[in-house]
Image 1 (cartoon, helix red, strand yellow):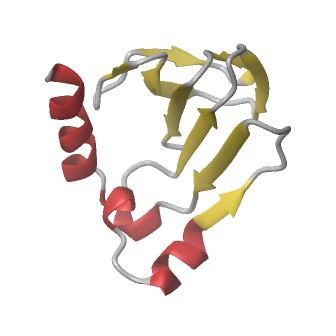
Image 2 (tube, rainbow, N blue to C red):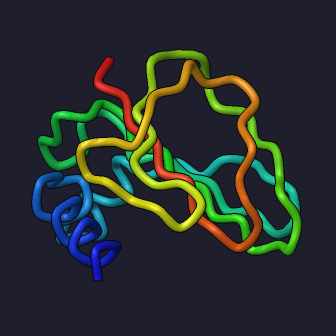
Length: 111
């Protein structure tokens, strides 16, 4: 129940997750090149007036931990390995990050 409460809170607090038109999404959505089993994209440029400049969402659909490259910078880890907290779980500087099997990694940065 706590996971879904935090997921709803994340959506409520961040307008980037509430874009309503295809044009809005197309203007801010950028997919990354990945290997099979991974989907990675960013919502950029303070999408829909969001305080976060960039939100990176990575899905690992494989049964193995995968490593992804995230641009260097100050990132807040919002979701990781089945845990989520709208205010952030931890921070990272980017670079090579591990994504647990069959999970999502959501990162955000303000600058």
